[in-house]
Image (cartoon, rainbow, N blue to C red; front, side, top):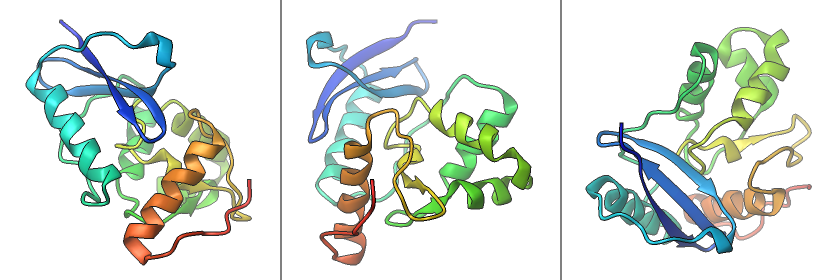
Length: 164
């Protein structure tokens, strides 16, 4: 299977986007020095266009064929993440309850952290039970930015007062 990739310059830094012939498989924060020429693949172009709309505040959900490699448990958690509405947050505790096992909170947090579709599968919408920003592979400053961005366009609010 061929994997195509491109880099996208977002307000949060460089994103590496990867796809197969049929699915977007990764959207990852990358270092600026990892930038390379992108492939001219229709899925990559569609993904870039939808990210442009998201960052402009015009898109609240993504309409892309997605496929991440992971265990059935991880797949279930990633599916639950897709159900969190734009501009909303839930806690790891709430996500564990939605999964159906409050005792699985650490496994849920681990699966959340293994999400390879940043922004599109909104793992940034998971916060601590005390409303604090905890754990984000892209860095807490990016998580805060994404939540404030969504709040601006969803609620018309500039600052959420989120604790880091």
